[in-house]
Length: 320
Image (tube, rainbow, N blue to C red; front, top):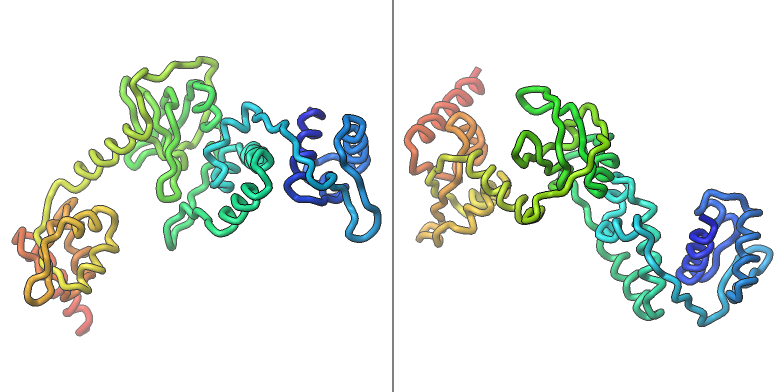
């Protein structure tokens, strides 16, 4: 433990130039006296670290000194892909490991490369939550992530939209989509998707597993989402939409954006024809009514009649 802390102190001094004993003590959750002993140990090992007392003082390395001891610990290697997602790494229980791994990567770079990496990191930020939405609590995320990494079976109580059920699963992977964490796992002889926020109880089982040899998480997720959207919206509506209508349809979601991308060219009036996937007539009618007079429903006729009926009801209510 102390050897790891000494290396981390050395890397921090290399990255941040000058640090006080109080700052280091807070960083590693030890006493200031322990930090002084650590600095003495580094000096005894031939590391050119020295300190200045008084305001603006602190410890720093001799100009030009750079360590080559930047090997990654196992947990840091696991956290490598989450270096650019600090909040997500923290939620998965890998926040500290991701920070240490990032520091080691920066320490391994030449000074110019380290400065460039910090410059880029300071100018780009990834926010995975959609507008006007808050992330749902996921109290079991860190334990699920640990089970995924360790290939350890899970027992869980899961609440879906229609029932609460007990599951025993092999956790294959985690997917972060639009601010929601999804567990991809094999249970009941099939691979399924579970929203981590809907797990009510969780237990790590003693058994471990080996995933299917040909399973690829990214490929499976891509095909699964395409299949889900096809099942969710089996119908199609043929619409004509103005430029304003196109923009309003685009706000309906990814499926609408894909339909717009396939739309025909504008006619003489600037309207385009779109084939929009639909779930049901009842769900599509109020959705399309909100677009207003910027669309014309060509077919199906049932949808046209449903939107017309809703519009008449709105007018009658407003008259009252």
